[in-house]
Amino acid sequence: MRFDLPFDMDAEADSSQNPTPRHKCSACYKQFKKKEHLIEHMKTSNHSVHQPACGVCQKHCKSFESLREHLTGPLPKGVCSKTFSQRGCQLCLVLFDSPGSLIAHRQTCRLSAPTRLGTKDLTYIDSQFDCQDSSDENHAGRGTGGTVAMDCEMVGGGSDGSLELCARVCLVDEDENLIFHTYVRPLMTVTNYRYDITGLTEEHLRNAMPLYEVREKVLKILYNGESIGKVRLNGGRAKLLVGHDLAHDLDCLNMNYPDHMLRDTAKYRPLMKTNLVSHSLKYLTRTYLGYDIQSGTHDPYEDCISVMRLYKRIRAQIHPEEEEDHGTSTPSNRIVGMPDCWRSKELDNLTPDQLYAMSRSDYKCWCLDLRSKLPT
Image (cartoon, rainbow, N blue to C red):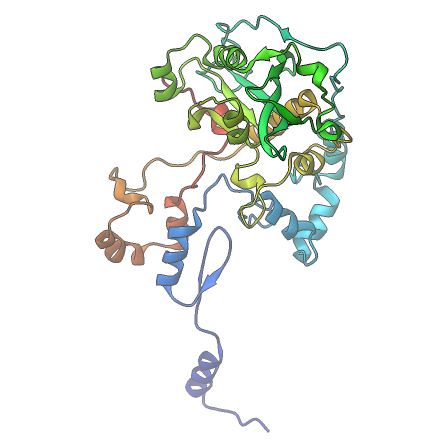
């Protein structure tokens, strides 16, 4: 039996039964008992307007994979899942105003697989790409020379065939034009042509272009007439290089290219697994573009087109612009690199929204390649 309590005692009892007010992250909605725990979370979460976010509840996720789980996974959020199932695109995860808008969008979002080059009667192609023409603002990286996608196919060397030897190189531009293709004569004897994967035989490589010459031609396309110093500084007229696991391809070509000029679908945070392990290009293409690749032998042209389409799809996202300053112009406004004394004295007085406004991504969003001109 419940006894009626005086008003003030009843209120006191109710307040004791209510949970302690929690501090909620404005981005991922995690809740913390203490403000200091929220602050520590914000220091390491790297939340920003560039993170994948639910179109229904606006929750921020570390990757598109975690966003997909939030919307359609084994334990989806009820309201979000129901709304997304009616008006959301399963490929790009964008939420539309109406089912009709979604139907119209699907006609352009799901792409068809490109025509494969194959290996018959195809040796060396150089389109004499005009490396000085970078005036088209419809192409990536305003203020740069545009974007090129590259893919290499490897054969095996060494006694067990495990050494990676570049045997084929393909480059395409943003309009999916083939601008360079050649077979490559490796520096050492090939012991495994990996025919089931590459479709290559000894005949393909017998009179192939030497590796050093291939490297020179690829670098000429990428540097686009720009000086090495300018490319390392801010890119200049050089081209952004798109690929999947570019470090592997560049290593096999014995070639270097500045990190800030690389756009790697295997290393881009939102495209990675929740544990920061890379997805395969085959998986990314099927999941985000809607078609299958690498059925049978790998075709470098097919891979180049797919990786370029992935890059352009991610680059086309529209994100709000971040504020450069938040009340003062000192670097201590940013959580990363903020002095300990400033943290302890100032952050406790900020609201969750203010903490979120200060947070920055730990990667460069590809949408920025179109938004701002790089200095030249």
